[in-house]
Amino acid sequence: MKQRVLLYTIVLGIMSAGLYFLLWWLEKPIMSYSQQGKWYFIIPIAIAFAFSLVHGAFTGYFWEALGIQAKSTKEK
Amino acid sequence: MSETSNLRKILFLFAILLAFQFVLWATFSPLVTAADVNPQTVAQVTVYPDLNINDVIFLLLVGFVGGLVSGFIGSGGAFVLTPAMMSMGVPGIIAVASNICHKFPKALVGAMKRAKYGQVDVKLGLVMGMSAEAGVLYGAHIQHTIKQSLGDSGSNLYVSVVFVVVLAIVGIYVLRDALKMRKSAEPEKEEVTKLALWVQSINIPFTMVYFPSLKAKVSVLITLPLGFATGMLAATIAVGGFIGVPSMIYVLGAPSLMASASELVIAFVMGLGGTIKYAWDGFVDIRLAMIILAGSLFGIQLGAIGTTYVKPYMVKLVMGTIMVLVLFSRGLMVPVYLSELNYISPIEKNLAGILSNVSFVMLIAALLVGGVIVLYALWSGHRAHHLEQKASS
Image (tube, rainbow over all chains, first blue to last red; front, side, top):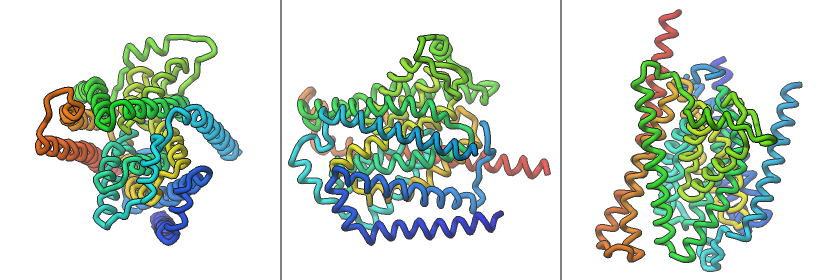
């Protein structure tokens, strides 16, 4: 179980770092399209969703791998 | 099978939400555009800022603490991020746009996390969120009108006065209630207010909706103005939750933990609508937004986990403490703006500078104090739980 969490943390961490690398690498075209506005509004929205999915999952597993978990999973 | 049907429901709700955002946006955009209809503003912001490593680290840290507080009380952090970015030389409108763009993915992750703990009332969040979206757009319109007639100082004065009035009334009430609950014989027990019981007793045909967090039906005619006020506050001071969460607790009768979790749904709806609005005009600096998001997602996960270890009054305690500290921070700036508008005798430039710096430091302190309380609550709750488990085994 612990190994599985660690594996997910590492894989998602690499994917998250990859996304940040892509953002840095493709900075110029991304910024120039975003700046044009109008229907290019899709670009920042899509990027934000992609990061929330990958980086969100990574951060969740990150704390779990460190042993910080919720007290219960249902009904407070 | 049930997962597929849940996915369909979520996609359907999401499609409705997007359609609703477009309708609202089309309705209100003639009233106000993100560029304040000033071609000079547009020209100024075409140059996106270059950030140095210190700026990036600062944004990551503020993002983390902001996320921590948001995960716990449903909102917060945004009131520090916009001025923080502006102090780095980021033009105001890009700071606001990028801040709001980091807000909706953060709220989405937080809402999903807290939904796992059974704390989110999606229906209440969506219903309040949709009217909040209208409030955001109308709030932006009011801001724009004030800015046109009284300039930047007038706009700043309006924001500060709203901060002071709202936080003085709501913040002190929330803090008092938290302290009262803490001292009571049963600190875990949350009583539904008389106002909420009365609201739940009102029956207006064809408008009644059952909300799981309230375990009761409430008319949407009551939730609409509450959501609208939340949105207007979000457009004015960037933290709608300071109205949204207390109104869900004291006016509708939701438990604190469910109110703060459902606020994340409202923040997601408002954030998504706001981002579409600003991105349509090309003002979102996605690099800035993603830097803040990098830190804030670590924080929001931790804040959400923290809610499973604490008694309900802790949500009120953190929220009330932050609100009162922010109240003093903004209160310090009121004389400065009054003097700029010549409503009172002029204040020396040096003194105005000192007040401005002290106010900004107090804003950061408010967020830090909130973050420290959340971390302490998480640490002590985690430790007590661990010892309990050890003893039972």
